[in-house]
Image (cartoon, rainbow, N blue to C red):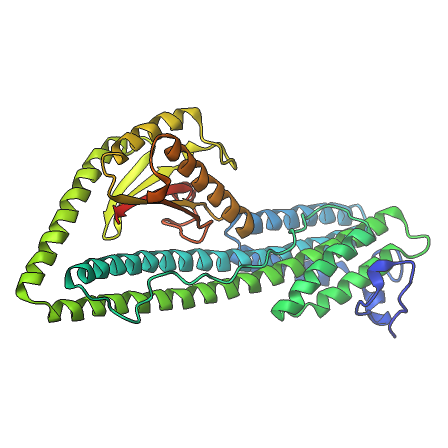
Length: 429
């Protein structure tokens, strides 16, 4: 029998009810009903903790597993003190924390896969840009333009930000829990994630927490258990959102590989049709560009390891400015960074024929929306400073990529530091 929604309780509206029998099971050992049998609950907890222990490797899932073990220790102490009801509540909360650890581990694994897919797509993007640049050099000498070549990067669909992740261990009121759950249920429906079981569990605990004459320890237990249900809901939704992002990124990588191959084949076809004299002219033009870029590269080498790394690719000379240019989470240039950037500007003024793309990048800490905005602001800060130093705006463009173009794994502090950067991509127009 499904309980009627109470109009005085907004968190019950439109929610899946719990059966009376199921509610009695939830209430067993929580201040009403028969004395609980702790042995099955302990055995069940041990099984779930073992699974969580086998899966947990990231800091979040390990922390949740530690919470579960701490709750288990407290429950054991209550059991030794012959407080069966308190022990049972502790065991059920420990189980909820262990289940959350498993879900967090799944999310962490999928986020690692997403990070790897971003690196793959970023590498293929660079290869495609290199191929297009070589093709355009060939077209310039051949006097013809290849048709049907993708020359601009397709704009990816914007990601919809997820609600904030509820923190474990916080006792929240029924209304706040209802609002949190409602936000995650919207995303669950959008992503086709099943959460009806968690929804029912949540309602049962909220109903028990607001029952007449409920004692404060029992009430807080049910509110914490309701919170664990919302946390589990959030992890399920996040896991599916990250899985979809990975699939979309890999599909994008496949497209970029096709674009690269199209440009390379078009270049080969143009070179086949060129006369010997034109081929010689092309070789000379490429050598001239190589010599010019080599000179630029050697001039910029003085900054290698100090606040930048320098490398050469087919698309030009890449100067990656490290995150020491900025304070954490900020987009204002540090004073000591401005001196080095001013020296870079002096060198760039000696190569007025070269265009400069200012690209901002971040690691994957924080939301995608936040990182994209931060990367754009940092790229704009470098752009504006170079303009102040006399570099023409006409030869520069700026773009923020957020966390979508990593050059290293975000699984380590060293990798994250490499990904927090502003790249100057310098090439002949």
